[in-house]
Structures are given as structure tokens and as C-alpha cells.
Length: 284
Ligand code: NAP
Image (tube, rainbow, N blue to C red; front, top):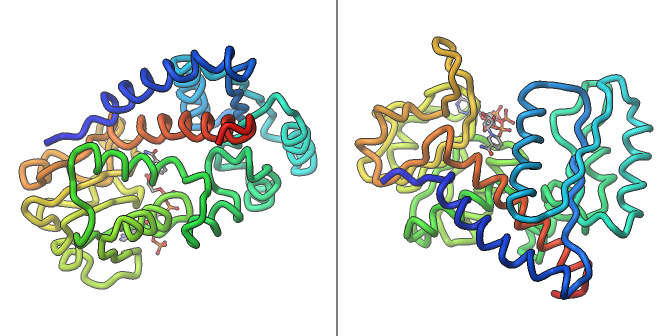
């Protein structure tokens, strides 16, 4: 089975649109998401455009603030402070990566925890690891949603996550653990990776290398979630970290790239924005 993140996210966004349509009467306004884009990296521009489009589909007000590549860290922090103080702003997202002269950690920490729709703020991360209420990071949240929607029983399963980044690998491992999977996290220093991944009943791949996971690395019947977004070096087309054509016949389910984890990430961003809005309105 191929899990279409595109279809699932379209369904979820339609449900959210119905919910958001009731907000003006209940709360006097709709949620407002502000996305800050520094510079004009084509991939970042395309992600930001996708977020604006999804907001429009759901009925969330979206403002994209564009700042030049040369913006100073101080100016960016001032802008964030202004957004934090603005009562009409419910969610703030600074598109990463930032130019090298800006300290990303400092910027993430500057965003008010209550408006941190990406779930990257250290206090949200700490809350996640302590099983406290928090804004969940969008990509891991979307992955769990896809597995559950596809009817995958996570509890008791052997899950292997390849990648240990703060935005994908680590939080998805924690969420799988919270769902009672037995989780192993692999990375670039893992020895004999294939023998490990072959034991996985759920395999999440977040490396950033085109078609890295081949059929011999996957167990028959595994659920395979491909987070990678890469350019195929030969065709220039988008492709994942998993060799989809070779792995698909072996997997019980698999996510495609594009159209898998990516759309679900944006969908969860919409959910997080609504969540932050409702909390700020005192609804939850
Ligand atoms: P990252 O920060 O670069 O982390 C990559 C991870 O992969 C690291 O932990 C690294 O190990 C590990 N790794 C690299 N080479 C490896 C190898 N040969 N064997 C085993 N592990 C290896 O990347 P990221 O931000 O997590 O993103 C990963 C991919 O997901 C990228 O393609 C990115 O574009 C994509 N992504 C997609 C979405 C989406 O919504 N679809 C969202 C976020 C990211 P070390 O820690 O040892 O270096």
C-alpha cells in the first residue's frame, strides 16, 4: 500500500477549513500565521509558498515577511519580538536554514513558546521529552498520523529511525517510543546499518541522500516512511531517501516522494497554528 500524504492532507485540510469557518463567530477572527523568510533560496521560497497556499485552503490568515539575505541577527530578533508582542499573531515560523551569520538556535529561542508552531523552541522540545503538553514538531507529528491512519499498530513493534536531527530523527523516535514501539536510532556512525534496518517493522528514513535505502535493507512487510527530499542527480527530479521502485514491492506500506511526508508536514503546521490560536483564545 502506498500512503498518499497528499490525499490524507487534503482530507484533513478540508476538515480544518470547516472548523476554522466557525472561528469568526466564536472568537471574532481566524488564526494568523506569520512566516518569516530570509533571503531567496529557491527551496525555502517553495516551502513558504506551500505554507501560504495551505493556509489559504484552510482559511488561516497568512503573512509572509520577507527579509534580505543581508539582514542582521539583531534586526531579525527585533522583528520576532514585534510578532511575539502582536496580539493578532497566533503562529510564528522562521523558515530554516538561515544565512550563516545568523545564529539559528538564538532565533528559535526568541520565538514565544505559545506561538512556536514549528515546535522547535527548547521549552517545547523539553516538554516533548517529558511527555508534557507541547506543540509537536510538524514532520514527526505527520509521520505518526500517517502510520495511524494506515492502520499500523505501533505498540510493540521494532522501529528503526535513520537520522538523529532535532527536527526529524530525534522527535519522531520519541513519538514512536510514546506509542510504545521499541525504537533504535541509527546515524552515520552506525555499524552494519543494513542488518539493523532489516529487523525493522517500521522504518523511518530521514537522511537526505537520494535512494540510500535499497531493497536488501528492508524486511518483507515493513512499513517504510521516507522523509528525504532530494534532487535525483541524474534526472534533477525530486526523490526520497528510499529507492521507491525497488522497496515498494517488499514493503507492506510506503510513502512516496513527492506526495508523502511533505504534504503531511504542512498539514500539521496548519493544525499547530489552529492549536496555538485556540489556546491563545482560551478555548483549551
Ligand atoms: P540532517 O540534519 O542533515 O540529518 C541527517 C541525519 O542522517 C543525521 O543524523 C546523519 O547522521 C544521518 N546520516 C547521514 N548519512 C548517513 C548514512 N550514510 N548512514 C546513516 N545515517 C546517515 O537532515 P534532516 O533535517 O533530518 O533531514 C533529512 C532529510 O529529510 C532531508 O532530505 C530533508 O530535506 C528531509 N526533510 C523533509 C521534510 C518533509 O517535510 N518532507 C522535513 C524535514 C526534512 P549524523 O548525525 O551521524 O551526522
